[in-house]
Length: 226
Image (tube, rainbow, N blue to C red):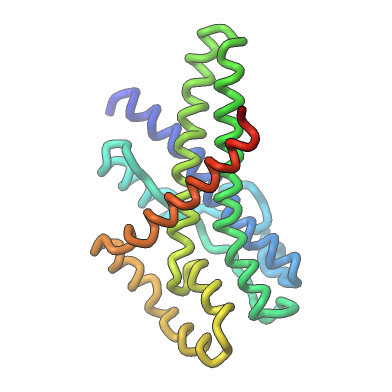
């Protein structure tokens, strides 16, 4: 394992931790705002990544993907923040906001990462070259990776299959009778998603949605960057 590979792994690790941590905390914060104290009571409304790490989704899967793609791609997830919908003031409506909070947090992080990248480019001409090489270059690579990671994490979680966030949003929008029927697939939802991934079918939803999110972010950045 050469030093460049280790450097790439380190550059990818921090954006993953930031993405999944803010994703889960956003769910918990919005749930708390609407009356559910479950996540706060369990100490999950913290930005400390250790509280959200899932051994499989945060460590093993990202590392395996990173090695198998020779450092070109990795992906991960955290322990889901517990939400008790019965504690929400309006469970059906409020779960839509709780579910949407995670992907929206990732989209916001991607946008802010874009702003920081633009700031670094502006500052490059004002600092010594050694600072650019030792600090700005790896930081810029980290931010670039963070933009892609957060956009794809948001798009993936918006797949309309429960228990993913997109499925929760769809369930909240359906009439009560249809919602109950729709939620019956939840015990099999993760297996369905895994099957779709292995069949390569998730790309027909995730890639177009990720492209749309990316274009929206770039359009917003153009309003702030000359």
